[in-house]
Image 1: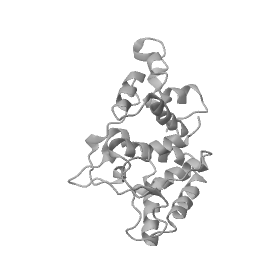
Image 2: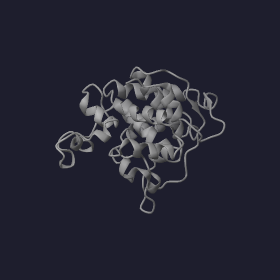
Image 3: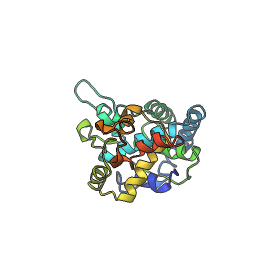
Length: 226
């Protein structure tokens, strides 16, 4: 499975109208190097961070755009997107927090959390994927609602997944690319083990779900799901 630059450009859409490469170069010249240093340090001991960041980025962008709303913690009065079912197993928050703390020390109130999308790009490069210029200039989102998290469920059939994606204006090819990116990390067995042995009492495989990348993560040992 190759990670394509197309995937990442899909995940960097329409949060700000004037996104541009090196947006923070004048106000925070070290921003990209700070992000890269933190990601590289983590990657040296945990290469699965690429899958974690890709998944976090996807879960953020699919809901209200790439606005970092997934990073916000809940309060006693306001639950956050972190509490939504699909996000309970998202990981990598600690890395983003460390990057943000370092950026604030270098350039206070300058680089948005949403622009730390650069971390995903850098992790992809470290994993052997393409290097590319990531436009920045996003603003952090103000709308936080776990009920807005309507991601495609791992149990969806191909037709159900396609319906969920096309509702977002995403084509079949886009969907396959995005779901395929989940094969970089690792899987939780409870999401797919029932589809390989006595599926719903049928004593057979769940043929209708064979396209799902969760299926591939079990069938082909060298391809894993995040």
